Image (cartoon, rainbow, N blue to C red; front, side, top):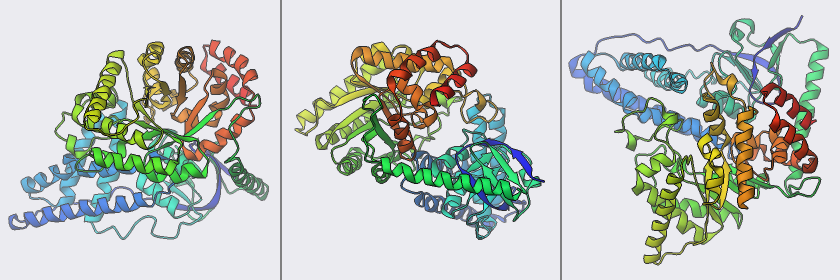
Length: 576
């Protein structure tokens, strides 16, 4: 008789393969004394373990496919930054000296201290960071314990389904490189780091099956239905045949999407729709070309400020921007100024700052830039100079007030005046845009639209701030709802503000790349999408098959509805 396990499907697709149980647990760490004359040697051993851990993570990062979404690299960068943080790099050294203990034990003492503090915090985002702390510290401890050769994926796991309690970002990337069929974890939610990576890397995955390690056996053949969040063990021949056919159909479907690459994104009633892609590093351009994007609707610039002892200066930034411009060959490039803070941990050169209790509501994005005008001006100058080499737009993240907008526009004008005096070339008419990411900005969209050349809706933060929830907190992520009536009203309000001011409005958040919402957004008035390269063709297919005239009348009824469940049902019918 078949065994059916239900969890949360966090990606798409069917996986059929044999189980590979991954039961690591925490490294066994014991305390022992270090003689005074060997303390320095023990500290050196600890430092070497940190260096090796960084090398391992960088090596894994280099294996990330060029067409993988930028979130994949961001998670790897977060763990690298944690290894540079003084709480993990310096405090254990002091403990080795004070307690005259071994490095493994000092690291355990610091881990317990940090986790205890995080567990007591009210902010759900910070509580979930303890998982990242464990992932990083356990990696270093295994190196200290000479367990680095006993990697859980050292055996052949090709075409296998991994079953584990949890997976770190590094684990997930390595799994993808070893061509596993899929994975199951006992913990996690739809917006956890592991879930986002699974979607980005195209790995069928189900999370939140709490007894998976007990119920599933090594080497038994199972089926993952990531679309329905189900796992089938001991499947009969008919079930297995059915799923093999579904698997083949899905492969054929993905291949068929490639034929859409050079077809214009025009709706059934003749409306052209802009389809651009989100990128983070210049290497992402290859993936953009593979799907035929019209340009870059969001160029995240954080990578030039993360994982380094000093941020990129004006010349280095200009060099990177010019490379992207050349690769785009005349297509538009929208550069977002740096968005540091919140889930993007601060580099080591910010280490002297006092930690904020709630980073999502603290000094991040444009707020940080306006506190660090020297570095901000360097980026403004670099972007302006880049505009002399191709079509470039600049976009400011997380603007909340018109006063902030006035400040950044004045700084941009100051940068222009400096470049004029230096006789440096730039596009004096470079388009300037504001991101709409917080409810205050959406409610003020009409005022913002009068001051800028375009607006761009960042749905990830807009939904999070509107609903007052942390989308990666497993305890409350079920509340993260793009179809909440308040969210839809704020999006619609922003679209109307752009239409009234006769400026373009794009969307670059995760909602823009989710085909479940494409028709809804078209009916609401969205005409410019910027998606991860991996989802662009599927969104294009839906656009080509849609009639905006008929969608608009249906969307009016959806916007008038006040109940999320009814809205979800109406959107399902819209997609049929």
